Length: 536
Image 1 (cartoon, rainbow, N blue to C red):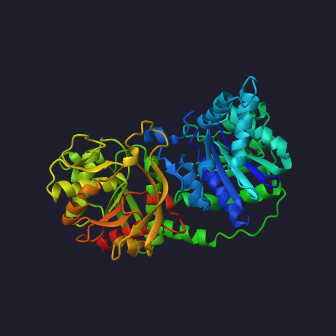
Image 2: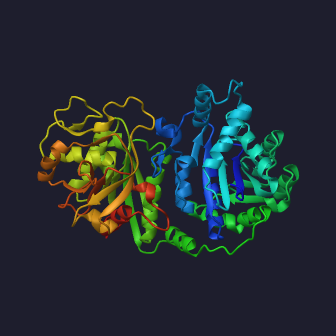
Image 3: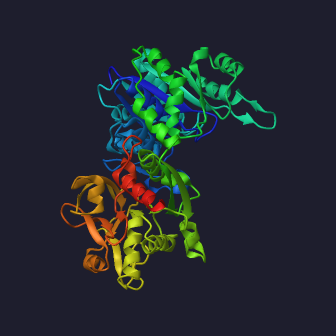
């Protein structure tokens, strides 16, 4: 990182302000000005990774090509900036401390007392260096949590040290804060942001740029007050107002505020031409679609936490924008479909999507959703557990295999049509032990999958322990479920379809992780096209 400039993104006042989207937007703008950019997330929680965390706590687990289970912000990085992330793109405090403790056990510290400073902070700095390849122009480092949190202090101290080591001319601190609006008095309040910047100053970090999330436009007096009390020039206080149309408008709004120009000027780099032509055209299609409307029912078990399906929702939006269609997503709780009249929630849908998940709760509702789509010729896309549900539904209701089930939910089922991967049978630990990352798949001639992808061999990201039981392949084929995607060695079923249905496709992998705003995933695009055709 000898010549790399560093951009540190921190947050204040409250969590969930959108640091990930802001950092991803910065990466996009800098790339579009001609710079090579890398990006990384540092998380202060003590879990080694998010893989064992509840979706209600953390949202979705985003999986990279190399099999890392990571923070959902890496999805923003890949979608916005087109940067392919990897295991080094996300470090947690748990991983940092685990590395230091392992080194201590090996005797690497030669009998020294192991302390937060310098050992933990040195490990954080090493992690930052690992996350950014040599020769990249600008490395962006997002620090999770909120300024003032005890958990974040080692990370903030580490980036303070690193900025000093590389020289302040090569490092810039961007601090994202909230400007709350008090409806009772009709006022925007800057005091929380002033105090947040003060917390950073106490540990030796003086923000170079203050980005202010706000639902109401700031007045000049707000800018001047923030500049004065946060020790900043007026131009370094940037407004980030809530967007109403699409989150992909955020980088455009930040460009209007000249955030990328401020960063480049502060880093002593030339401000090249910004080319957002393709991005702006995508936003126009997303915000002002012209061809028509389509409604998709997403049947899940974590609907109270929409971020649990973040990449699925975004992939649907990408596909709809690519087809110039207005998209309506109806989130359906799977458990509701087992109650009388539950199918009414699907009645208005042009397409049904059943995403992944773990655990038995809601499974029968998901199977009912598959049955509804099959019996009513509604376009269907099943993902991971959604494919398992499609297999179970066919086994029970067409093949006549009573009580067919996955062994994930019933070890004693008479028909284990979904069973544990052979290599998973002796695995006891839960974290990082599933079939993870990018794996190849060969598509069958004449399949809808091949028609969507346009190539016979693909590679997609996985996160699962259970698979279609090969002992039931022939029975399922006779019941009309075609196996149209398999691993190159022929052992793992990756995709199934119903040729007797207008559009019925299910996959073992997670295609949503590879969808991008400017290049929608082919499976999602094919699904949206089929749903729109049905709506006509």
